[in-house]
Image 1: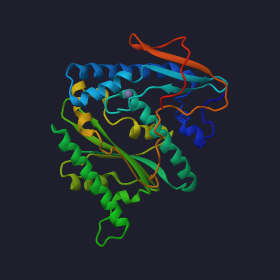
Image 2: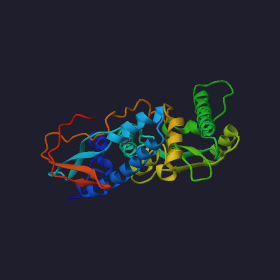
Image 3: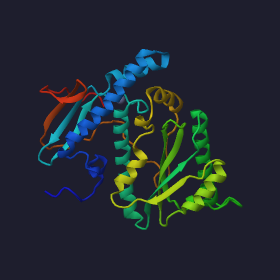
Image 4: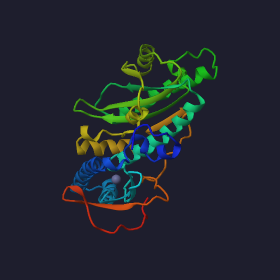
Length: 318
Ligand SMILES: [Zn+2]
């Protein structure tokens, strides 16, 4: 059976099959990736338990119950595996497992919208725009600087589009729609917050013009990258929806600090044609109704997810 280039429809996009992650043959890889993510969550749990505080006690309780088991269903007639049940803490700033699942759900929702837009506006193409600010030691200050600068850039677009007198043109006016997220790294040279944006436009926004505009706005950074997303759109889109904190670049201490600063902040925004996309609350996959399946139950034991012969419980935790 040819597995590539199956016709795209909304149902299979939202379920994640567009990215191929639910192919039965990829389950082993997926389990390994989830296992590595869960291992990091457990390190964070230990870290928080070592120096308990009011805030960390609740977070630790969530981490302690997150991802201890994964109940998949293998729909063997179509070669698909869906995550049917699990317990998630939904603390995506400290838990890579929840971050991965959250990213997958956002990716599915926006790819679905993109497919619909493409039908209606075939002249539009997706571009990946990255905007950064200079590194710094004070995360809260750098984060606020990025957020404020982005707001100014979006204001420029809105003001020009709505005909505000003397409002200057911005290359972002080419965008008929966009969705952007904030991401954070720290590779030992200070905090580096940045923004990844998908821009839908009929012609490519000029990187040099955007760079000059971004320097005028930020006063300290001209680093802007704008490139077309070619080939499989899920790869370019993935860049935007992967995670808010880059766990592998952060010590546990820095990760916890970042989580405190980013908590409650809006890290995903959209405009124009991408406005109003709803990301499902559940971190589980959609089941494939009315197809026969095998249950595949994994429990985290001795540092990895291991297949057990257990009979799974019903789907109670979404
Ligand atoms: Zn979690």
